[in-house]
Length: 194
Ligand SMILES: [Zn+2]
Image (tube, rainbow, N blue to C red; front, side, top):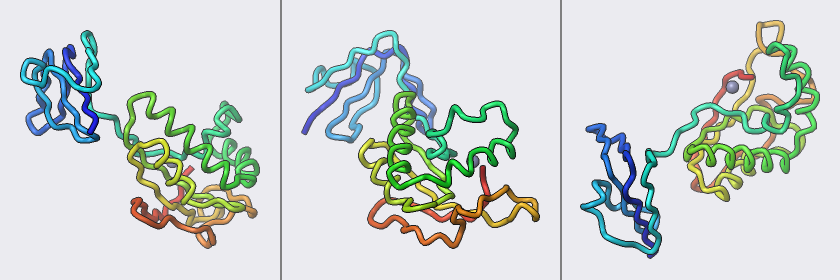
């Protein structure tokens, strides 16, 4: 099984129960299991891959607790609008979302997060027009390799009840979209959200 040695970090932040921050620290990984964390002097001397991270701070992966990854496809549109104008501009565009668009937006959004140090992300997907499914999000997350907590959202209030403006062509909580199956975790989250 492949091994990895990270050594000589300026500081290794463990975030363990004792909040240890180890100067000149490192860690030893076998497969995908971290077997040891501690001062470089207490770690194995070598491994299949050795990273000398002198001058670097090493910390656990960041966790993103709120995202709507499909919106990454329209990130440059209506940027100066307030929330409702932004939504009414974008809902007709989002009504054209396809399952492939869900997959592409998830894989690009999660890649961006991984490049910024995020190793766990949630996503709140709450519109399912056309052939969109939650399954494609989970497949994309598996391919990127981050931990992923998918959520199947919906909207409960119409605009006249103080909710967000809806476009009739978007399916809401009566969506017939498939939900995920298999070992990936997912939840259903019945709240309105932009
Ligand atoms: Zn949100």
